[in-house]
Image (cartoon, rainbow, N blue to C red; front, side, top):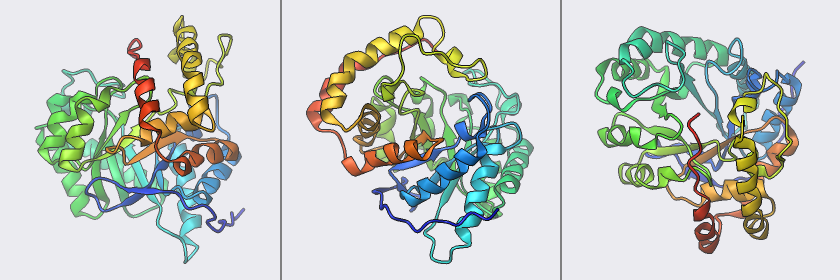
Length: 338
């Protein structure tokens, strides 16, 4: 069935993605959940409608990964969207970012991980070729390594693989996705000039990128993709102490033990601040991320048109007031590693 692409009806605010020259939507589409695996199963029809709605709402950056889904499912869904979009001669550009998994499929990478075990040159090239096939495109706008260790900064093999792919016209820009709770692992990398973009966990709880990473990115004009802005859904304010997740949903372990109770307690404590300052808790949490000048775009998972409308509206609202940001500082929370 051919999907008719809607005319764009919503014009979202955009920002430069570092020194790449790309102008990207403040809210980007996070493609992990639509892959289905570890998110309770696939819902392809809902996902396609969410993707199309995102374009209609002005989203132009779609972030995915080779391992999102059982067989490149997320990339393939986004590839369908790109094909439909290309059929419209008046369409505005859409940008796709994807990721090369570590060869050992070990997430996250430990600090002493041997580079050749995780990212040998032929593995990076092979994965890039598979992503191009899944997406059915000739060039990936941003290719990222899915895990990162500071010890790899000076490694020639991964860097040469990326440069070869760039010279061949198969990728445009290079990025890395940083391990959770480890933003400082990219400081040397940002200063080295070897990377165009970093992707990092950043939300009201995990404010740590503000300390050193964001100033370095601003200084060296490296783009920042902020991920997990809603702390896997908790910052929407919709979770309760008795919330249950299917075993096939990774959040059953993310909020395991006492972590769900602790998280909900923190969220309920901040609820009055966000609900006074924003139209909803979700929009307030996204606006917190957008309030930092280093952030180029905030990617959020969306599996329904309702979620798309809610999340993209955060861009309309603009940054939070400085006094609100100050009030949210005390909710910085270092939860157990995950």
